[in-house]
Image 1 (cartoon, rainbow, N blue to C red):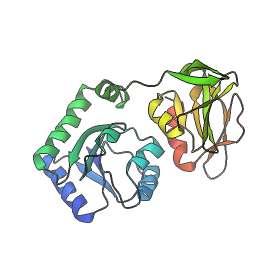
Image 2 (tube, one colour):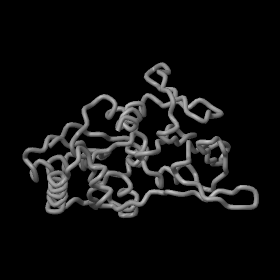
Image 3 (spheres, rainbow, N blue to C red):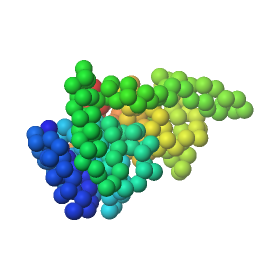
Length: 249
């Protein structure tokens, strides 16, 4: 079992590494990440681990930023001194949540839980299994204004969402445009990640809208979608790998 530790305090990650190996002699710590910046770089240049132990509050940001930016689909056990992040943690691929100081017995139970889930899972990743555990219901309809009326729009009719000048717009497959109240951050949490992808700060796109993908220098990607967008949709180098995996799933 290859384990990645995300923790910015040296005494904490040394103790955690020792406890993990005491709980499971087969565990191999393959990396220590101490910041969001370091994490974004690490995932681009290293093989994926089997399990992640992650603190939440890092020196430069919350570790959620790593998982959100790169669409990490690896089981995570979150570790933190604060319980205020528990609900947010389970929006990612969290299978457990431990409070500091870490108790060896609790840590062993978390590792055993991971192994049990892994053995019972009939899929190659944890998407299906975690959806059963968390039972998250994704957004299926959107109420939008059309003149003085409200009309419902199904997620299947959405080509993309656009944020511009602080305003969010829903664009349908037929190129009809409507203002909606939700921000892209909120929509990203509510939409089914199988069907929608957060391309960048400005766009969330539907897989059905993509027509072509062009290389755009320095390992970036440029998307051509239908209907056309007012600005180019560029996928960053950091997101290119996760985008290709998402589109090919």
